Image 1 (tube, rainbow, N blue to C red):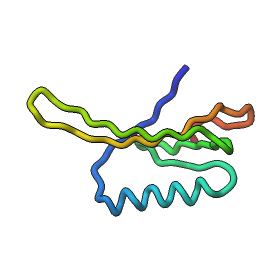
Image 2 (cartoon, one colour):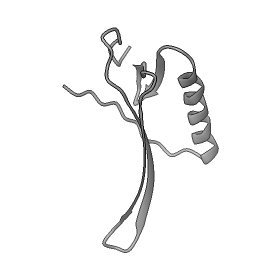
Image 3 (cartoon, rainbow, N blue to C red):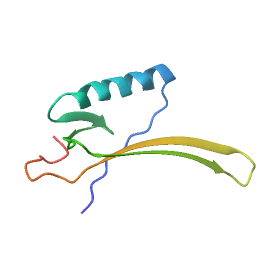
Image 4 (tube, rainbow, N blue to C red):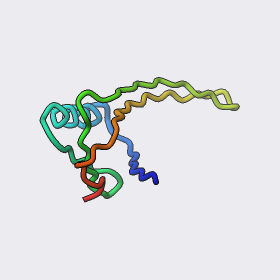
Length: 87
């Protein structure tokens, strides 16, 4: 079974940096992190270390335009004592 929670919104570069800084601060601390995603509060507790992936992509359309994206992904095996994702 797969559960996925996703949110998308337009933010300024400064606001996006604030989100990353807040996440980084929580990631440096021990224990569980809580993320607000699509109206839900999602709990995660990444292992140390965990797998980290960065993907940069450029997609071209048939109309000649293109779109670029950057995705960051953390991946780890769920631990037996890890709680469900949603509070």
